[in-house]
Length: 316
Image 1 (cartoon, rainbow, N blue to C red):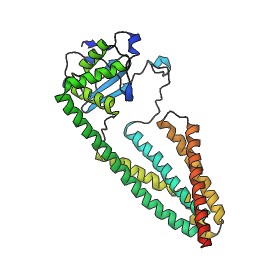
Image 2: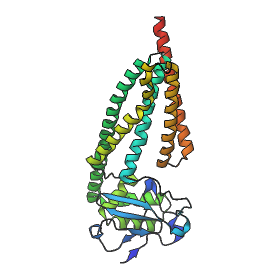
Image 3: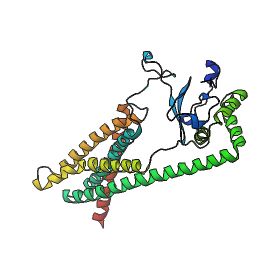
Image 4: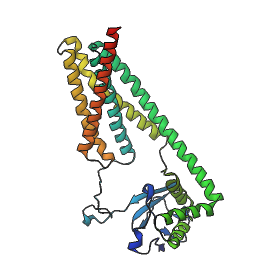
């Protein structure tokens, strides 16, 4: 198979634009996109791409094992980051859990500020937890589905433009590459090659013009994510309320119950915040402390709001 390299030299390869995670690549000369087997890689010096039915997926190149897991830009690769369906579920657990704990912490803090009994805390906290768990799961599903439909609509529009105004779209893409430092001749060569493959070019148009990446999730996957978030919200959000169930035993005072519950909540927020670092570039300690501080702010504000409202009621 004959391959045509987009950038002829290593020096010029540094000029390859990579907006929104999209990388330029070599294409198989003389083949249509339909003739490329599903999942087959077309290698390039700076990346890899998998031709796909609905667009493109770009992947950062992996160096030889002997380089210690280094990427081409000199940074370490993180093979432990969750991806795919497992990654989506893990993310739903982390963020659903953070939301649930934050909500319960706000309830018990406001109740503590208002000097409310453990009975009221238990009733309000449980009712709030159940309602918010359901609402969070439904909102997650509906928002994800709406976003997927939006992407589908935008793709259909880009496909129509590709079929009816192909030359204009190619000219616009050439200008985009030229504005990033690519030579005119190279930009025209790159775009002319990519434009031979409708699905790939449409995916590039979506990424470059709109900053969008296509979603391949169906309703079953969206429902799974929503259900996982519902369970995470409910199961972790109930933990700050458990101590108040010991009220009939008179083991702790109302203040001790609040202090113990708030302390457990902050520890859980730190742990979940540390896990949140797996989805970004921040360190686990920074992400953990960040989430904990936000929890403290939430608790303090709720406490003083509860105290202020109770003082106002007492005056009236």
